[in-house]
Amino acid sequence: MKSAIKVSVLILLLLLAGYSVPADAATYHFGADERQLSSATDEVAAGYYCPTSLHTVDNSLGASNIRSGVNIFGIVGNYEGYEDYGIPKTGQTLVYKTNDDGTYKKGTPTSGDRFTDNGNGTITDNGTGLMWAADGTGAGCNNGNTCTWLNAISFCENSTFAGYDDWRLPNINELTSIVNWATYSPAIDTGYFPHTKTTPGYWSSTTIVDFTSAVWKVDFSSGNVGTNTKTIPYYVRPVRGGQP
Image (cartoon, rainbow, N blue to C red; front, side):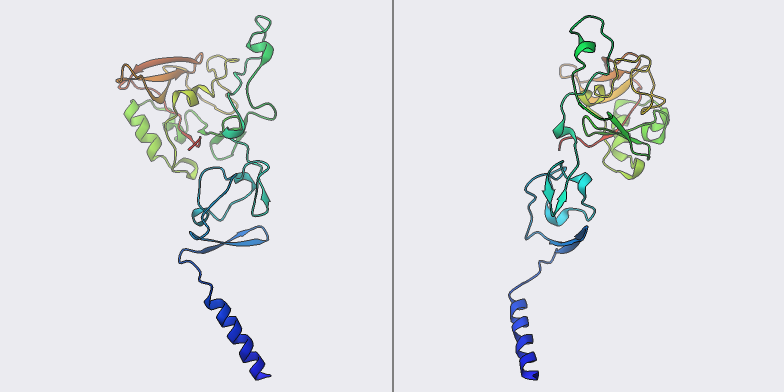
């Protein structure tokens, strides 16, 4: 009997000897499943919300981090971000002339609520996948204070608002994406973006190509897009996310 046990142990040791665990291996739990991820198995074929590698993926991978309909490790994703949408609606519903914007109301999202209040001072735009600091006078928006363009960039890059450290100053297309042309002064959904300042406007990160001392900005009084020099004080609303 003892000989049989010794033989079994010897076989087991031989089998284990042929299998080495990479130094950076880590075990992660996905629901009831367990997976060992390391640089030796370093690919995500499709579906994760941004490019990644298995040995750096966090251990909270769940349906909300996987693209809708994609199955990773037995988890079916429900994430629907920027890659599943296109240009957002303007918000205009009144018809001023047949076949105008109010007639067609084209844009995304095509169903469901446009914005999600995350309950931590941030708002997610379900049409673009971007996350915004919500309160125009809150800590995420520089407490409603104006600043120069360089200081606006610095504020966003150094912000750890709501526990995130990847905030940035939005480009002009991103900034105009939250304008609501169905409202005025401010031209934005104040249910999700309270205390938004109307004038003089909010900085974008986009410099004017033929006048590099000036930048594009958005006036939320009417949603007007304009320009001004980088030393003029404007408001700031950080954003995070977007296509890598």
